[in-house]
Image (cartoon, rainbow, N blue to C red; front, side, top):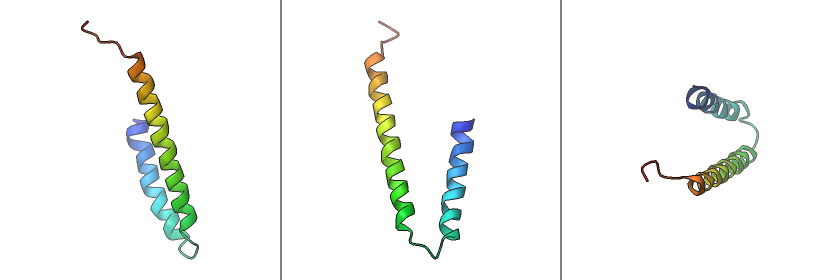
Length: 61
């Protein structure tokens, strides 16, 4: 429930609101943070996927 509802709603609500609240500032710092966060999450997810595939054993054989 937390990971499928609350965290995505918080991110979707906070990022645009924060961007609009800082309309006078340069948006490049925020975009850089989002890009770094995206790369970090993708790398973490990919690492976990590879770890899980190495440890996978079929249930039928």
